Image (tube, rainbow, N blue to C red):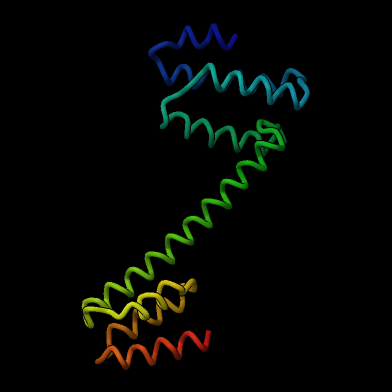
Length: 160
């Protein structure tokens, strides 16, 4: 049926999305086992590709349907892989935010006290706490001298 509906909807993505949706709904209504549903869904998803905008809409509809009916679409290993990917993405985003904070502090200090001593740059690059970087950025904008900033830097780093 997926093959026939895919052929029938060539050139008409909205129609294909509707056919795909009907076939997915039929999976749960025909009494297939969870394992069979997962395998058949993978086949449907592979055969009946959709443009990104329709795929996002389909995924949202599918998620809601799956939650309402307790219908499995992903195997346990796929769910764990998604969660692992999500956690890795969060960690990567956090690290990027910290690096951006360091870069902002260094940019402000370079604008005020160019050139910066290597030890100041090294100390700032060792900071991995976002709040500490925010404090340094705020204070760095109002410091009158590099020596004054270095005292603040040492003070903040010993407090944290």
